[in-house]
Image 1 (cartoon, rainbow, N blue to C red):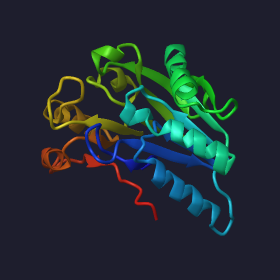
Image 2 (cartoon, helix red, strand yellow):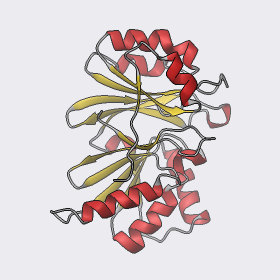
Image 3 (cartoon, rainbow, N blue to C red):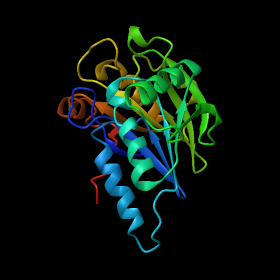
Image 4 (spheres, rainbow, N blue to C red):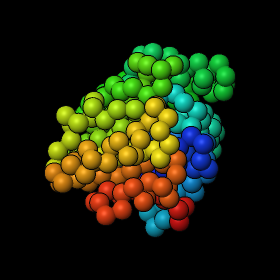
Length: 239
């Protein structure tokens, strides 16, 4: 797997979905939930204590959308990185509108210090090959995104929260890792597992690796994918 996870649960679970990867001394997060913060803090401190004694020198956070289970941990991380780690934080927003909303949260509500973070367009990061607009909840129409990522020269498609796979299909081939949300409850704003199983099987048959994330009922979804080449993302345990 190109991505690791601090959690793989949906909004109403104990551990919200929070992905990451490293590139040298850079840590790249895809969203960051509040439950994920302490796992990140332990990983950073373990990195500082290893033989090389090097922690992360820069933290990047790629935002998919502004629901609290996806961005709730970002302000706390900004504070901690500024006051404790003295590590720069860069937030990557997929649109100017999303960037503006994040600034309101960080500056006006959370009171993040001037200079404690910066916001840049997501497509300016070297790891982002394509910003992929998608649809999730009606209230966030036009403000939800997935990504085509380049991680160590390999392709990953990350759906974020979405109610449709269609925007992502053109970017998936046999060399891709697909990180796809899945739900056992048919809410209409997430990908219902029974509906997407045929498409995911076809994608896996074409050689792509298919990993499920943002899970609302792991037991039910595990039964649905039994006997397929589809698997769950793995979660970093803090060690």
